[in-house]
Length: 403
Ligand SMILES: Cc1cc2nc3c(=O)[nH]c(=O)nc-3n(C[C@H](O)[C@H](O)[C@H](O)COP(=O)(O)O)c2cc1C
Image 1 (cartoon, helix red, strand yellow):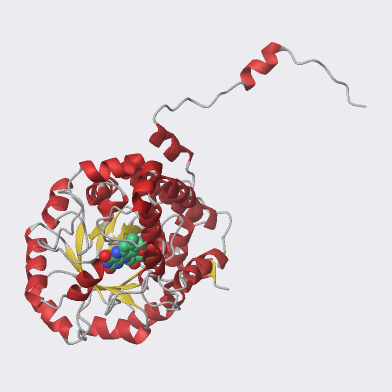
Image 2: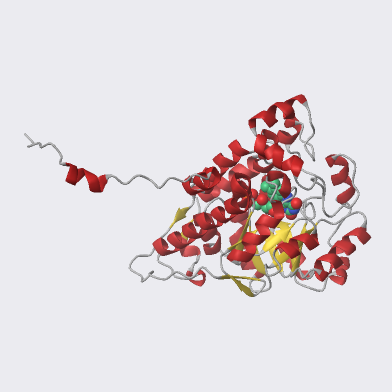
């Protein structure tokens, strides 16, 4: 039999530790989000369905994205014990220059639709946290306005090759003049992927006022209020566009583009060149031979070809094939700091993240993007310490077992 007693107030009092009251609902939601998955849950509640689905969704049956995430989920991390991990250095290099963290913000279109603070919020976090930021051709804030919002951030400009080559040259010249460090050419969009969630939702840019969207406005009043009372949602790189999204993409993307066009690009851009959307070893070698300084192994977050190669699986072979000829970065499916660490261990020089920061943006604008970075940074540090490594250069294939 256990002896029991009535607890005394003096014993109970130290146990009473109520959580500090946070009156600002956004701050409260962000504080309570412990993972990128938690930020996704907040984002889903805070934004209209079609906007959330545009961001969260992928192409066709969304197999590419599921497989990429599944490989990160199913791999095994192999720790080494009894090392002094009291100080962990997360610094890595992009284009030969140090960066505070081993992830950068991938280019994403229509960012101001996800939250009215849009690209400016993302680039400001990039500046504050020393993370490079790639502005998309499909951005909703101009090249110059993004530069002005964060003059000291490391900025890259992501280009889609346009049918109208002069327009592309003009964008490159503007990016150069505004101090963008590098050009990122995305090569996995010869035609637009089939994003079926968007078709089913009748998604349009700017969002059309239909019975459905008006009903939705009642459920997400602050999102709609912000949309209607801030700068109209337009594509910043297209000064006069009044067609549908499909027509726009058709105008932009040039399905005739080949590797020979990289010569034209090299002649128009004299800074570092990153090629994004590489999905085979042979293509990685071809673009590096044609002058690329870095390649991004990516299937566009599963938004283009469905059942495409999983970039992480391709990584060790590309690393071997390229050696020191070019930097190898990887994206698609990263939702935690442990994913970033696994990619580095398998040979990536660095990574890009897309949805991870967009969920933060949708959940709380600038503060939400910052929370996403904070979550990922803590996870990177903790994972490295638990693996027994103190800097990125110590990570190697011995730390990861792929299924
Ligand atoms: C909403 C959204 C818009 C995107 N827009 C672009 C774009 O305009 N240009 C581009 O090169 N990639 C674009 N991407 C792909 C990202 O740059 C990146 O490759 C992808 O998001 C990585 O996968 P993750 O979201 O799983 O991190 C977009 C991705 C998302 C989710």
